Length: 270
Image (tube, rainbow, N blue to C red; front, side, top):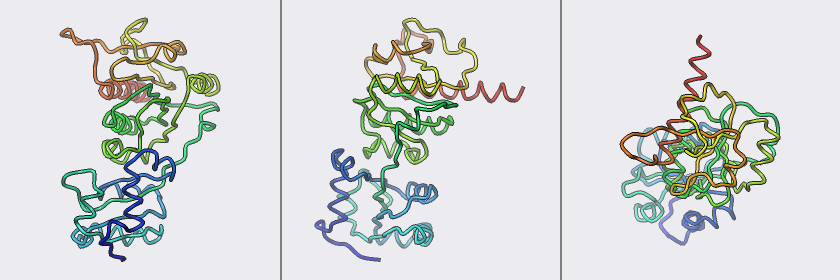
């Protein structure tokens, strides 16, 4: 395993650049930190990853097992100093392992055909932590894709990737979609578009079983935009007590997605 002690190494320079969105988009790569994340990436079949490890991490049995399994997928492992790992890490107390991975490809053409199941549409979500949490929730609720409108935060930013806990690898992410794209997807897929809004909405528990749909969640401050709401076939809201006006968008997504997943499971058992 090659040892690196200079910040001028080409792989270290690339990793540093990938902290910025323009380089993630230009190179088609992103950073993913942590042993479990690296194991997830390998389990998902990722090949040709570049993985930085400290000497301390490389001495651990679990990391050694990862390195052995990754040989078949042509992963490149680079032993780095603690100083370099600290410069590259996005966390205060990391595990001494960080990987450069290729961004998964998800083309809009995959959505322009008859579809089934649950999908999530995010309209103007700005917080990377919310983005990653919704990705994790969508994966756990069995959703088949995440649709991101133009103006959403980058799902491959370090905080979003970290918050997703590996789910960025499990759910196809369709980026930079316009209102016109959403209208085409709604028409061609046959999936109803269901917005989250109090105005014109009904309590989500009165909606019945929804097997196939795109659930739209909006910006942290302003909710789903008027243009997207105009395309919605239905609107739902979550009743709240105590004068609270709204929930965090990630909390709202969790409430609705798990409710409708459980509705389907309950009906299938009857």
